[in-house]
Length: 265
Image (cartoon, rainbow, N blue to C red; front, side, top):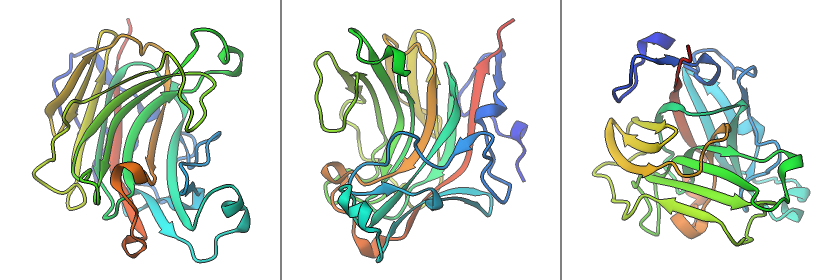
């Protein structure tokens, strides 16, 4: 069994970095550590047509498992809210984190459901609806195990800055999005084996890595507020295509999450 200190960053970090156990987990217990994580997103039910269901988040055999399922008997209120028989899953940290090195060992589901590891900073109520107010999001990765639109086996790295209040499907003036250009298809399937994603969030730079290889490097012009850490699997039909019910249930599996931060003297 790997212990917290046995797993090292896949990239070189300075000696000032130390493991932050509040945002790190081996998932070796028989249940989710609810002192660190929520098995849902507090103010979002998931991207339609797939609704986040807390029961789809579990810990078993040393892995965090986020399931997507096709439910025969979906509650009527699901459908009345615009959701379908498809259920998804989301994990969110209880607290926010600012800067650091973020690492995950993962395997994507064998379906067109997404696998995503991301940070976001929903603004507090007193800061919303004000001129110049933005909600930040950094997508450490989004990948697909399958896709009918050619999105499978690509390691997507993206950042967003959304003016508030945020509403799905609305476009606001002043929004900023930048993403890894010409994201190539990797020479392997994310659904077949585990891979290590690493993200370095510093005051002046943002750097993304896959299995220790730099994939994207960008100046940090905006992201200087603490954010929540999120893990989810959800349908993104316009990106990966329709999810085949025959591929469900499917699982986004996570071996570990690690966060290292600079220790301030």
